Image 1 (cartoon, rainbow, N blue to C red):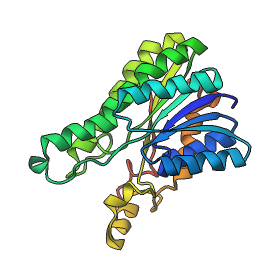
Image 2: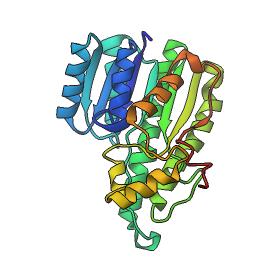
Image 3: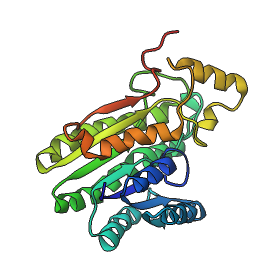
Image 4: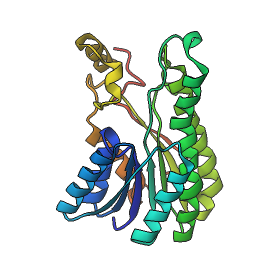
Length: 250
């Protein structure tokens, strides 16, 4: 790949799998999350395997972190080509009338506003390189399927699709591709909040045409596609990688 990529939420789940895959494919990785210990372990693993990576701990709601990540990419590796804005939260769940304003605002801040802040600093750096690939992790929830009790999550993640389309049309003429990745149920620590019992897990798996959840590595491969030149004519899309949950009725 020989490119430089920012990966947010890189300490676990899809972000961790994607950071590993990007590094194996030759990318320089700027990895960020709140858990510095997990990030340091990731960087050590990547370097042990011959790759190059830098860990930057922090909260993606912090605009200063968004700026720091880009500055680090430029200072350490000469520029920025790819940004996988993947970090997110389930947010406050439950009946919508019971959701607090603070819970609503926090969910939007993590899932949507932080993605905007990332793009705000990533795009100018990509323009300096003559283009790049910007990727947001959205979801099928609120896009192809409605689910009760997750209003803040669905609204914030759906907002990423609108952001994707706007940025794709705004910066496509200048060589930046922007896409949203929409995973189905995936075996991650964040998703475990949805499947706290064997019965709940069986229900979630049964929603999918493939009758199982994804492994994080499977979603990472789709992120790699969007990041790479293999998707050179793909922009503004909401790419479903959902195991058929959007079409399944069995």
